[in-house]
Image (cartoon, rainbow, N blue to C red; front, top):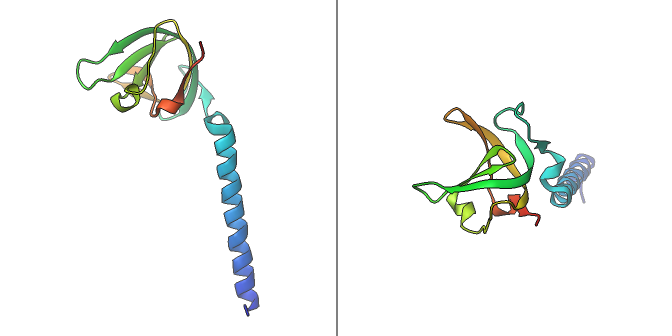
Length: 121
């Protein structure tokens, strides 16, 4: 039916598919916590971080409907498409994942999906 080289190629392909599926399952179970670093001022731009703390302030931008939070002294930017599905209050404890960036000289964490922010209260 298959020659020896074809059987090896098929076996190799099956192994690669199994490894990819296993990694996908691990990321689904463990999520971003497997690769996210705890936020600190030393984390470089572009890094995925985990930030936990209380919401100290909530500001809506004058254009675009974006939200800017201060969480434990750290600026957090939430784009309007993500902010539309959230109901946040000051003094709520949150845990969030986001990407660190510097915007107009100020460091911030950008949350890219509603599922990346969880209210703990």
